[in-house]
Every structure is written in C-alpha cells, then in structure tokens.
Length: 68
Image 1 (cartoon, rainbow, N blue to C red):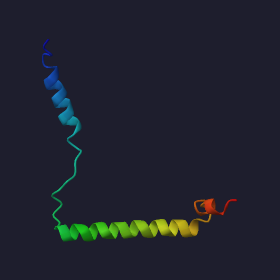
Image 2 (cartoon, rainbow, N blue to C red):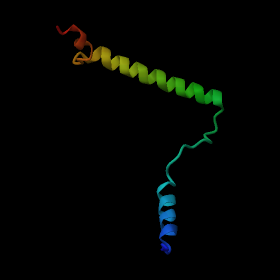
Image 3 (cartoon, rainbow, N blue to C red):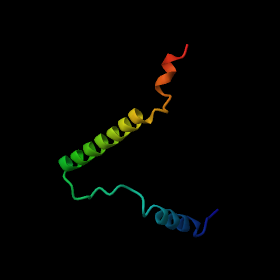
Image 4 (cartoon, rainbow, N blue to C red):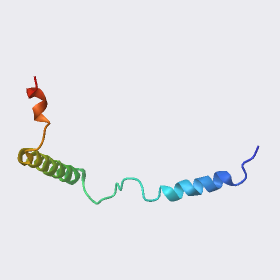
C-alpha cells in the first residue's frame, strides 16, 4: 500500500504551518540583558496585579476564608 505523494504534501503543509512558530533565540541580547528584561517584565506584571487587587474592591478571592 503506497500513499503516492500524500506524505510529501503533508510535510509541505506541516512546514507551511510551522513557519511563523518557534522562539526567536537570536534577539541580540546577552543572557544577562535577557534576565534583566525578564525580571523587569515580571515586576511590572506583579505591580499591575497588586494594583488591580488593591483597588478593585469587588474581588471575592479573600472573602472565602471569612465564611462560616
């Protein structure tokens, strides 16, 4: 049982789908610069989340422990 050119067509389709995917390892940064960038992004994310939790008022996440 041969598949003809179906295998080749499937490979071409898979390659076309995966052209835009994958991490770009060559961003021109040293490992130290990359760590600094990532740390800054995490700090900003944490600050945003803290501001949202502190100023929201409508959050019920902390109220679960108070129920009796």
